[in-house]
Amino acid sequence: DLEQQSGLFSWMTGGERELTQQESAAVKYVNQMVALEKILSDWQSKTIEKQVAIMHADHVMEKIVAIGTVDGDHARSLLQQRGIDDERRLSMQSDYQALKKACGQKAPDFGSRKNKVCC
Image 1: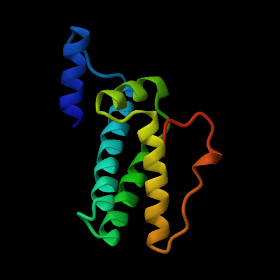
Image 2: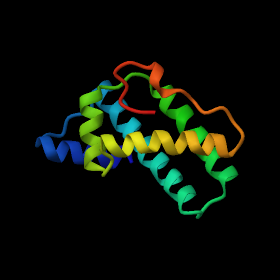
Image 3: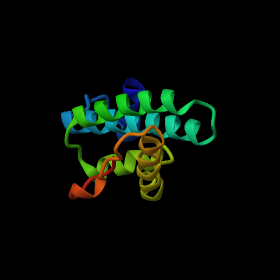
Image 4: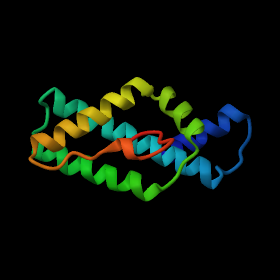
């Protein structure tokens, strides 16, 4: 979570400074992406039903959108530390689109954004 990440960031940089607004946004984004990855993985493994998965996934996506623009390089680095690389993010996009279709909903078009980090 955010406090753990900020503590980790302080430890990694050797300082006790506060996160900048951009760093904080990137950490929030990464935490939401980790949550989304878990939801999609649970749905793929049939641990949760599609209706439960879509409810949680859509909620996480709303939070991601609300975060706004993040520093792509910083977010990518933090995501990789959490085990989510570019390839996994692309598969998460496909999984989310498949989940939307499985629930009879229109799948989002992620291709319309330029320089997106993900979802």
